Amino acid sequence: MAKYETKALDSNTWPDFARLVDANNGVWGGCWCMWYHAKGESTGASPASRRVAKERLVGEGRAHASLLFHGADCVGWCQFGSPEELPRIHNQRAYLATGPTLSDWRITCFFSGKGHRGGGVASAALEGAVEQIKRLGGGRVEGYPEDTEGRRASPAFLFNGALSTFERLGFERSRLIGKHKWVVTRTVP
Image 1 (cartoon, rainbow, N blue to C red):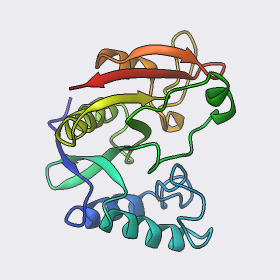
Image 2: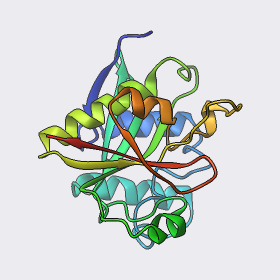
Image 3: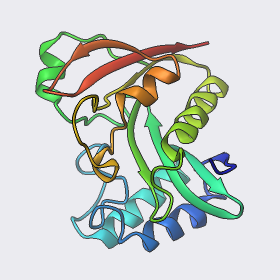
């Protein structure tokens, strides 16, 4: 496994983040990791407008991620934030039907750049996110990973992460909200 370093997404690391996103077609066709933010945060549907919106949120301190570096290169990330910062999740209707108490933090999205998938990027980025959450005051953290045990699932489409990755880092299953999608929780001191 490669040696990684994590850094917070902020105005200083924005150029590294932007280089990785640009090198990977804007991530999933130009998402710029904006889908989980509130509708209306971006002024348009184009990748260029999402880029501008993401940079604005980063500058305002309303977009968090653990960026993963291999040497000088940003190779992936794990996005996290409060439910107010990241109000949208997949399987939201099933999630809300369980009568949840909102967590302090959500982990919503992972990305590994081309040539770095399958090398532990998601695990290292998740560890970095937990460390950043600890520095930001800790609290109850939720994630929404896929259970891939016993079935083939392409790592390229596990943007919410794999259940096994979360469980290795002390997250516990809370409830099922999709055929293979779980809510997992962990309290960070």
